Length: 168
Image 1 (spheres, rainbow, N blue to C red):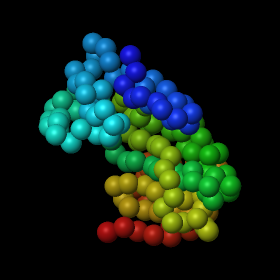
Image 2 (tube, helix red, strand yellow):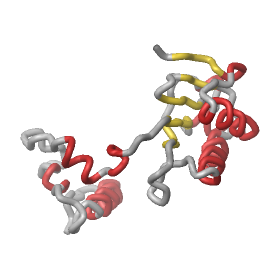
Image 3 (tube, rainbow, N blue to C red):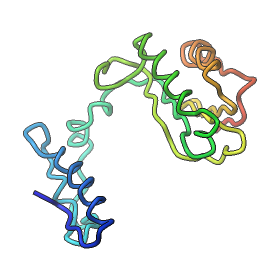
């Protein structure tokens, strides 16, 4: 069943992708009807009550896990032009090899690694942010990834030559 109607040619492709994603939320594993969140006009139904933290945790196991750090690699236009996709894959590859990366196949991993959009470091990317430490790195290359993992992610000491911003 389609949840979102499509009226214009471009809307057909967008609606098809959204409908496919919404279908993933159906089935015995999911207790909430996410399709009910979508109003007839395609907007979110704000009259519906917000799910409880317990309901969300039942759907999203990462909520319950004891993650130590989150690594965000900017893959927006400027950072991507400077190799950020390769930097992201280098983080994921080494963290996976060391069984530190959290993902569906390794829910005991301590580090979540994901891409993100622009953070305003466009002229000095690739940018990498590490939380909860609030460390923002710039000019990160694939060759820098093992040092960041060993020194910062495992050892707690940021790689100072690449740090450009500290939050908090």
